[in-house]
Image (cartoon, rainbow, N blue to C red; front, side, top):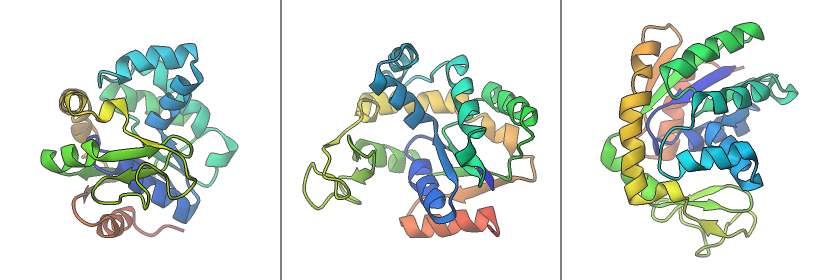
Length: 216
C-alpha cells in the first residue's frame, strides 16, 4: 500500500507514519529526514537546503523531487511506502503524478491529518530528537527516562533549529500559503481521507487505520 500523509507541521505525520511502517513493513519516506541527512553529510544539496530549512521555508521543488523519486523506486519500497512531507505544494503533487506514472506506481490513500494551531505549536516547541538514531520524544507528553538521553540507544537529545518558537510561526505561515492548497487538490479524489490528529496517540493511530481501510 502506498500512502501520502499530509498536514501542518507538528500534526504527527512522522510519528504515525513511522508506526505504520513498523507495523506493516512499509518504507517510511520522510522528506525532512532525507534533507537533514544531506545537511548532516555537508553535501552541496544539503548546504543549499539548510539555508531554507533554518528559516522555516520550503526547500525548492527541484531539490526534493529527484530525492523522492530515488526512494520510491528502491527495492525496499516494494511492500509499499508512506510519504511524509511530500508533496508540500500543488506543483510537487503534479510532479509526483508524472513521476509515479513513469514507474507504474499507484497511490492507494491520501490522508490529511488536522489539528488546531495551539496543539501544533505546543507539540513542536516541546519536541526532542535523538542525534544518534533519530527517535523522537516530547518534553511533556513522552519524555525520556533520563533527561537529555535517548531511551533506545543512549544518544544525546536535541531540539531542531526549526522547532524554535519564531521559526515555528514561520513554518505555519508557509504551510497556510503553500501547502494548505493541497486540500483542494486532493479532496475530490476517492483516495482522500481526513483524520482528526488531536488527542491520545493510540486513538489517532486507530483513526488513521480506519481511514486507510483494510491493509493486507
